[in-house]
Length: 173
Image (cartoon, rainbow, N blue to C red; front, side, top):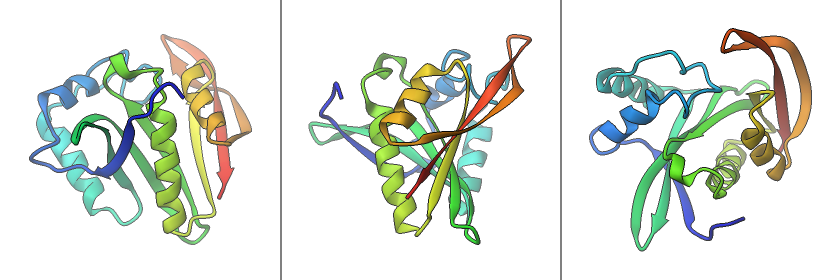
């Protein structure tokens, strides 16, 4: 771990957290090259609607990832837990760090550690995450958090007009 700064997860505030900076992250093809958001255009209004929907949801929980430095909290990305099956006590996580200057500094690993705590408080027994086979950074942060590769779905995803495998990771809590 390269950084000792503290990571805090909290629900996003519609007034304070939905900013032009956040919109720029959502529209940055490099930030979202390995997500379903890559070809979408996001306005501040549709970002607000998405956050509002997740804040009301009973089985999807969206959190901002905030870096705490010198009593100052900076929004650097998001992590979502859900959808959750409360019947099976399982959930799926997805995440991104929007500020590219902070990539590779261990913040996603810390955010996943925090979302694991949230999942345990919800009494979930397992969480999962999927990723493009070439998304080495995401694979590393999952493995650092003791997720195990559980499946490979051949030719399940498209990136730059080519088909790639989807890797599915899981962690028993």
